[in-house]
Image (cartoon, rainbow, N blue to C red):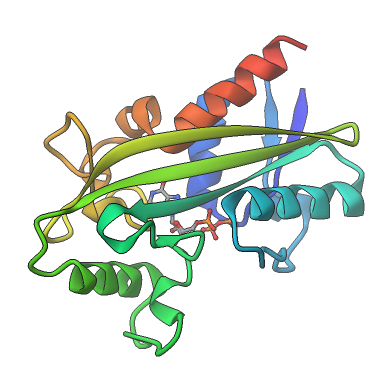
Length: 198
Ligand code: ITT
């Protein structure tokens, strides 16, 4: 089955490709020749995932899915959440000289400095638009924000997120381990079960 994954993020693409396996041919936006930025300007993960999936479906007429992911930190009342990608650029921009992921991590560690309450979770929402109907899937992984970044694998906030039950951050794990337990893996499980059951 051919599916479009409406993402510009190559890391996400390879994570989901290895989760879906060989029965699906998955194409990202780069392969589709889409270079424009897809709007994601809502205030919830659900609406953003939906907006990205419908944008591609309406424009290219191909069944497609999109994910939106946020890091929800308990001590920050769920922030940065839906604003995780632009966290360090919200309000007074902090660390504009850093690349976004590094600036985001720096700001997060500053906001939590001295706090022992470091529980957080990643939440992924996938919106699938199949023949003009939308379906949604969600995945959550609980963990804590570490005191400092460790590891070089993965992307985004991975160096400061240690999933519950593990002694290492997502960025210290190899992809196959992250893919067994992650927020995105759980959401994709729902997607795969759905597609297999069709
Ligand atoms: P899209 O093209 O799919 O929108 P994106 O990188 O903008 O790609 P999101 O909006 O879903 O992705 O991500 C929001 C933020 O959360 C962004 O800063 C990501 O780096 C980060 N993020 C998403 N998934 C993550 C993961 O599995 N591990 C660590 N950080 C992640």
